[in-house]
Image (tube, helix red, strand yellow):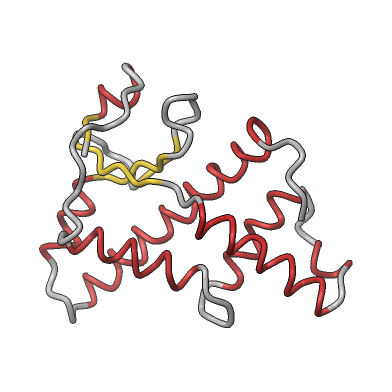
Length: 160
């Protein structure tokens, strides 16, 4: 947990961690598990992350089934071994974002306001489903920036 000022102006890594028992932390852990297991709803997300790494949105057209599977496995391994951290940011009007600076490169910011609305919504409601979609889409968007940071700044020789 952090504030807009601490993240955007001071570039501080948060010192207050969201409890592992918090429902949003559980959502992130389950989603991370779903994202890194093949044959699920998020295969297209994995493919888009690979397109970022390779700089080629048509990468699957240039590979056979075995090559596609191996490339997807490598991306899932990268995400499962070094997943980004999430910062729940107070006083933040956007859904989420990725701050591209050395101290925060491995963090994705998510709005505390949207996390609170999601947490307060009835679990079986359409509102909860909509807010889940907003939060997960925000995380995916932030992960795209996170992957681009890895490719451009940290691992220029990343191989897929």
